[in-house]
Image (cartoon, rainbow, N blue to C red; front, side):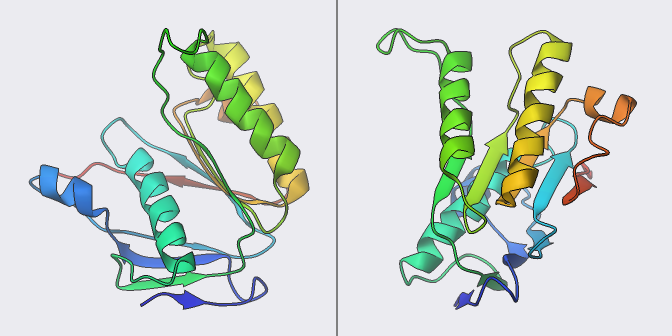
Length: 185
């Protein structure tokens, strides 16, 4: 049973969170845990393909909706502060029906999050800037991170872009914390 708290206590606290659909398709699923505190709420998660970064984002989004709807969640513990909106930039497929590329759709999703999120919003971003030249993608992601930091939205961002760390590009972000997912055998 999730616990809804005030935003001053915690933004999100997850212990042993799972994603039921992934558990059905994988031989081994390792539960995730994380804690987001207010005023330190921009988490940047790196790691290799297959380490579970995208599943972490989808699990957090799914559990947030389930908790706000009054349901139980697939976790040993899930505490959630006040959430006014949820914004995502998670996996898009190109399609001829929209007339726009996956990258264009990504840009629209990120613009929507940057224009409308508040300090009580949850923003989940997976691999933003991918599909461009490496420096351009890193610059787009860095500028989005600076704006999310300014807004103080509760945000989890996953990326492969090591360029962000090479020259201290993110040193001006006050609320950013970095984590690395690992693959175990």
